[in-house]
Length: 553
Image: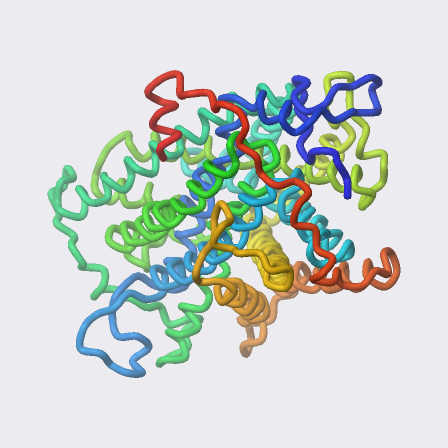
């Protein structure tokens, strides 16, 4: 079990560098005592930042186009007398329940054992080293694919103004420079920028939700009271690929599932910073208990507002439109508000920069942690005299170049490819967390621990964990269904949907039989003592009204 925290602090927090290639860890108390605003906020409440990104701002448009809006008779199977939500709203709601169940699993483990490395190291402790190896590399892969997806999304959003007058490579390069610069300046610069980026995104989405209600009630310049108009015309469902009847409507809804997952992926990142969180026994359970509010507000609320304001047949929706843009921007434009669409689009562009910066930071530290644990080449454990894991940062940064695939194929199409891969890899991360929890639960029961005494526990366990395990596998297995429809074969879609799914068992069985050759950890031998959370110090109080608002949220 490695004793090094997964996230070295380039300002000297957590590590001191005696040479340029070797880092020595401080104690956990020293680490926690120095994690202050904004670095602490930017890393322990990423469930807020993760809830607001290109998946919500841009990906929902494609989900709306392929799956349809809200309301209507569910697949016309039972023909109920009242309208009920479906497609976009149902997809985001179901994935939201999976996300919440996953966070229940993660929250119970990390609030009791907030060890550096989060769920990756917990997998080693409660399953076996091979599973930890698989979860770790899958998590790195997930982040490294998300990185070019965000850069491609930034080019898509900028095309709202330029209409491809300037090559996408120029905009990708600009965003890439910003991301690399933030990460090379160290943890302090990353923490400062991320704190304000995420705060700005929270304000943006809350403002959009309020504005959406006003526009729906006829408060826009055109005074058009929309109400539930688009629930009737063009209707709540889209017949997928022109397939008629209940089958076409069902496939339209199912196509939303993996797209919805792309919006939620990243919520689990709170577990990776648990080892450095202040007062983990108090703060981590608070964050987990309030996650449902963010799911309802940002995801479900956002999907509802979009379904109100934008019809599913709007020509600007989807990843195949030459002028694709965020459905929020489309809604404001349709309302006749001048200037504001550009302001909102600019805010969404900054969200893609923020997400890309976070992806590079997290993936480089994940790779660094894998090297420290012996699961990656030791060259990635090298750090500068300031503690910056420059080899890992450089290597991960090279994958940003994948975004340039959009120069030839189109940034919209490339964004779709990467979002597919991110969704599947992210769902497999949730699968790994749930499997780890099932083993954690079994060990607790076998060793006679009372889970009600833990800092956080849920009465829904272990059923919530099994719900995550089964649902993630089902969604991943059927995510690429459209390539098997008549005339629907697409090699790129098949690879981007099923390569991440196949890599997980390949990594596990390869590590299990050729690298570690160690059996499953016996429930009687599981370690529930090392790394228990201890709140033996005072937490720094908020210094201003913004920090008070952030801490409460």
